[in-house]
Image (cartoon, rainbow, N blue to C red; front, side, top):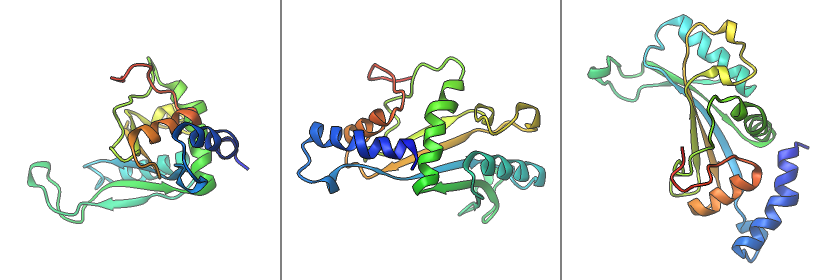
Length: 183
């Protein structure tokens, strides 16, 4: 069993039940899924597309799905059904493995890191964080990078509010800033 999943079941669940006074264990928030997304306008270049797909595969351990534009946007030179990004959805063991690597290896590698912003919750307990470049992930060697691209990680929880979601992620080990504003 993954150590982060074990920590959730043995430490976080009892702490959350005590903190929020849940009448039963089914109401305690948990992790549902993690979505890793790369949005790029110029995905029509085969080399860029292949590199992004390869990087997402290395980071997540799973083959990404290419995303297409739903409608044309002339100002951005995007046509309908044009490939504009790639994404991976992680659930279960792969999700816990990814989050454990994210917390213990990737986030500490970020230069000038002062903590995760507390303002990136969506109002329903889900959290999104972004990286400006893929080189923070140790699965990708810096020498192999041809084009730098950012990526976004969305963590969906079963929490009903931001305070429940923040409590869940803090107890799992996410390094949030100490103040309310965030970085």
